[in-house]
Length: 296
Image 1: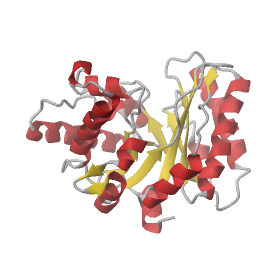
Image 2: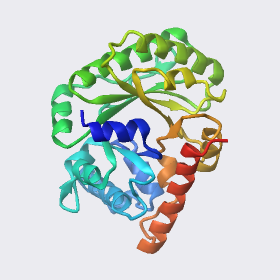
Image 3: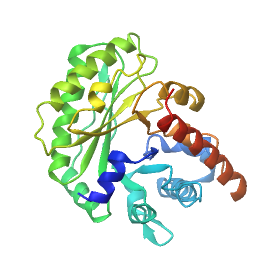
Image 4: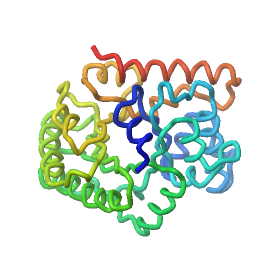
């Protein structure tokens, strides 16, 4: 593990940018950016266009290590280049810690949750991640209802795969998202917190994880997880909240920092001039940084 990257992730001021839209969510991300489906004819063309968007974001002067601790990449983004360097190397050289999304999407809903689909060849992917200066990984599950059996299954699957990632020398971001529209959201988060804590307490001292969680209904619900010795950092997803609302509720949660995706890129458009694009991105980054660092 890279000590400089570890110190940045553990203690750095700022937030983690989520630039990891994958196959299923890419058309929507491109559409929001002003690129319509009639502008590409194949998956390859689509991924090139989304890489162009990400390149524009990460190479912007607004995207600086002063406010951005790390960035989560999609596998295709890791394999592509920005200004002649692989994306992970480009970010690392810029002082932004690179992470890699490793999950293959969600299974069908069962017991009120969506587990992750199997991740074949994960060890090979982790080896490639190590070659590209990747510090950690991210994998997402989805919790839709207050169903203890389902929540337990989500947490157990996350930690089981998390240990495989740890053994490859990387830090897993465990992401059991709670749907923002779920009934009994606060009760789900209380139970989820206990389930995660139970798994954290089984880890050896040198087995370190990060957590990516929906901003909780009850402020500071996750404080016990944030201070746990096996947790490097806890970050929050925007989950479909507007940026304004996500920032507002994030501010209520001590030591919880953002890892926003849609809320980061929503106002950007392919047709903006570089000056306009950079200004909007800078304003967005400033607002998310403020909510991550300056608490109410």
